[in-house]
Length: 134
Image (cartoon, rainbow, N blue to C red; front, side):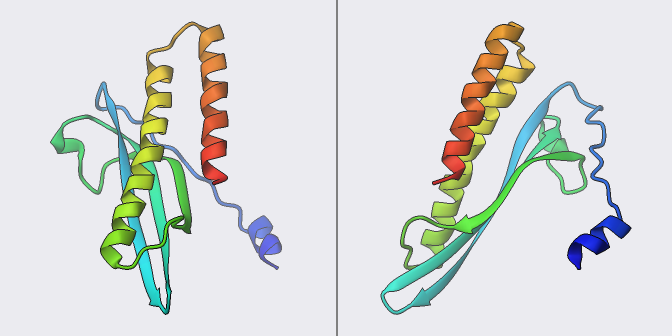
């Protein structure tokens, strides 16, 4: 039923040009939810990693153009007993992934030799998939 609707109503994801600035930055938006139960603390986290133009505060606004690089929603691995703990753990996990993505973007932008770049990106993508499967 859903597949039929999608086939009849095709949609496109359009990535607009990031022109207007010579630089880009990585933007990470994260949130967490917490539910207290007897003996357990269930927590979920969600994050979206975006590449947006500019590197000054004038570009850090809600209506700027951004490209989605990664998004996820999953359970927090550690037991949390408060909303603050859930938010903190979600933020730490999102920043860890953000550092990895930022490293990959840096290597792509600074363009090493094509042979070295292919090998490095293959290693980083492998690390990213291993990180997601935890």
